[in-house]
Image (tube, rainbow, N blue to C red; front, side, top):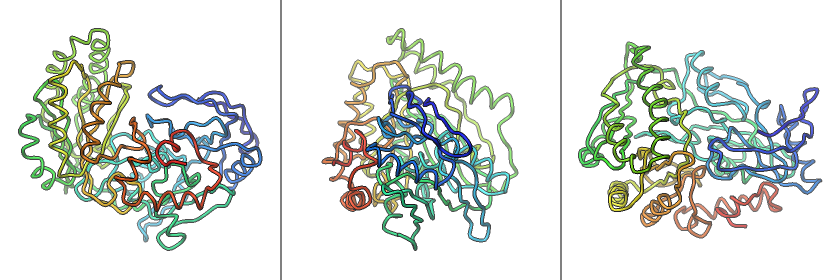
Length: 446
């Protein structure tokens, strides 16, 4: 992680050091690193960087697989820009500093009897990192974390601090809810929240043919539906989350540990390590793994149902497809694995999202199904990911901004109807490309 030099409550210049993301596939060596504790300190750091001719990027906890946060200029670290600023029960909102980890937000909201409507399946990211790259969950009616934002505060390239919402600077708000760090550095976010509720989770093995044949039915009948297909098998594991009147019935202490830690992390880690050393063993391991998790039902508060610990490190590619094309594309992916020499130890994850109105959201303007492929860290992945990407691109897929892909601005302008709207906003807010890096040049052009 980067070395910071923060003295006396102000984000002072520090040595750059090196920075590495969670998966270890991206590294950067900034000229310097700062950890501001307020929007004012953040704005001052941006102005100083501009005077010194440095580009600026903000890094969260490094959970993106792309180099979205990499810079050789000034790196903004999040660890001091944290905390809940205010809770407005009457308005149903919570305002939080941008560097606050999602796990802190979720636990604090729960302590106040509140919750987000939906969330992704891990909560290690900072709130600003999660929204800036389009982190999402699965949902019939709600999915993206960015879609739950009602206001934000943005430090722009000239050091101005903009308050943005549907009423105040609405054109900036429209883009900055999912801005890739291209418009400025987010310093504060306001989320819509609601009284905490209970979810009943029903996890159940199901064959690939059954789950794909019933996909529309399962997605329509459940508030939150997802499934995992185990390559080299015809087996899937499904999860249906629906609101419940209770009572709470969380997983047993021992059984929950067996499912979520021993099997999903401990044993799976060993299986992946064996598969990396002996790839020919992977299909056999997959058949055993796909039968290891049994059916279970439990009821708990939202973040304990939506999220799970992820301790096995991997790299990932995820594409958002038009809903009507998703099952066909998944069938093509299964056929690809069956006819190829690829040895895939990680399950393929399938989730849903409703259309939204955010310019660069992967669900912008269309009902969406997400298909995510993973490979264990240290395992060759480029051929498998490349072949998968060709299938997804043939169906007008949109790559997750924080996950591996090779798409460029020319391709993305074709699959995002409001792409030009976003790039025009970027040209206005950051004409000198203070917040640029190699990844943004790839996906947005220059």
